[in-house]
Length: 396
Length: 134
Image 1 (cartoon, one colour):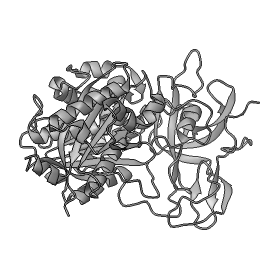
Image 2 (cartoon, rainbow over the protein chains, first blue to last red; image 1 turned 45 degrees about the vertical axis):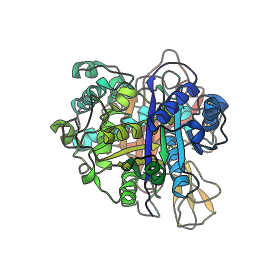
Image 3 (spheres, rainbow over the protein chains, first blue to last red; image 1 turned 30 degrees about the horizontal axis):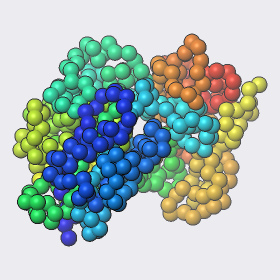
Image 4 (cartoon, one colour; image 1 turned 60 degrees about the horizontal axis):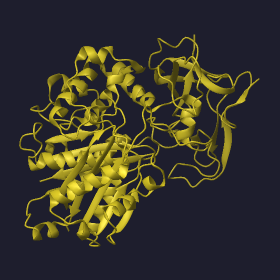
């Protein structure tokens, strides 16, 4: 049995700091995806929403909030939360329902309205919540963890601020003509190196911001696509939502401490390596098959980590890829042709879906102004707090 | 003297230590303490003894934060930049975070640090911190 499902439609609400109701972005993106697919909302049998935790109860039940706004239709519904990986979780649920034969047409939507500044934990005094504790006891913001990884690259592999600036410059250029990107402006090395230090060694322009936005994909069975006259749709060939393996020995948000490896040897692959490995295994593909990748550049230095995690090069060699232009449009393996989080900022439950939208358009040859030539296989990757892997492989 | 910011995470002896648990069946350490189950998937142990963790470790990485974290991090006026380190403990084979104190601006990965208990940034409570070993 084929494990593929078709991506018949993709749609987004432009990223920005619009300050409106997240449902509005979700409906906009959903209608765009439905129009792209030529499918009527009332023919959708299942809707999966990515949850937002920053918009009250309506956000906890994002799937039904958006379904109500689209107009109650009796569709089945689910809402998934997996922090930054929520979108991939929602895609995975929709895909599973289609592959199980429980439905043919599923809509996946994620949207968020975000506050300004650092993402902060929920209120109250919650001494058993690691996310609350890390802020209360340590002031360990998200960039604190990004800075740990960046400093290790610097000391262990000779990564420099100029390498990280090169990542930002590349992504800013990639996103210049992306109509859904929030920032569409070139940036210079001087501007990056002069931007304020946030968490040493990372400066403001090395760190992604938070954004409002919405993204949606319309997934169907291959048979349904064929009946619609689409014999060669872009397909979801793998979704990796793996958890870590014990003992996880790399410190990750929001943890105060890692697992102990005193009694059990660490796994062969780190968690981030294992996310991509599971996707490759499921798709029967490898890094050599990729034509492009959308990786989660929460920081510029983290984009370099991802190059290694998805197997574009060996550990410690990512700097060479950015220096040689391998990951720039026109290079060997373009990374973040959308402009990445550097141009979007993060709209948590929408972001993993937005990555899938971009790869879909790339494989369809519709990524105007940022098209990767002859794109047949693309991978998205990301990681959600508390151990949520998120990787999708799309093929043509 | 101020009280610990959280109960059960560390001692306030003259030679303070972090308080964790160790599984009596497999020897896995946990910090913060686990009280009901061992997190090793190959172990179904439920006997977790309280232990003090190594009070010295080596720097896995660190950062200096130049912007104030949002609440519940104590908000102070004026804001003072603060350091946070990820420290590897050899015996427990784990990494434990902590704020930094002392002269840490030239720290390198692999440098040795030791545990102290000091007032939090607002002076209202006590927290553990890592300090470079001279």
